[in-house]
Length: 90
Image 1 (cartoon, rainbow, N blue to C red):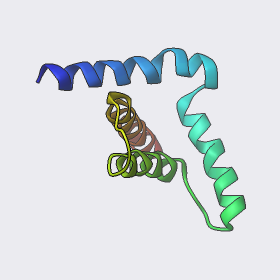
Image 2 (image 1 turned 90 degrees about the horizontal axis):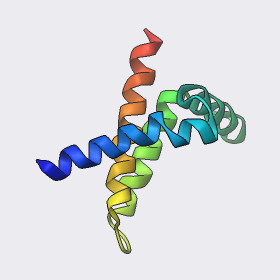
Image 3 (image 1 turned 60 degrees about the vertical axis):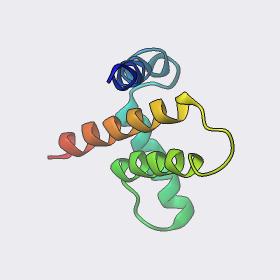
């Protein structure tokens, strides 16, 4: 349980701290990525899809190569961002 709390705390720090300073608002950033992916793929992608697909990218990384704690921290961060985006859509 201690490791779970540590991972979640670090994920929370990432999405609300330095990354937001570096990349701007996470929801706006995912909306921008969605627009770019949509244009490239010629298929509508939404910000929520981006966060879910980034989570899946991190899941895929657990199957190959050396896996770091950061992989799991990033998975939880992207999942939380997906939830924030989903419930802001309503």
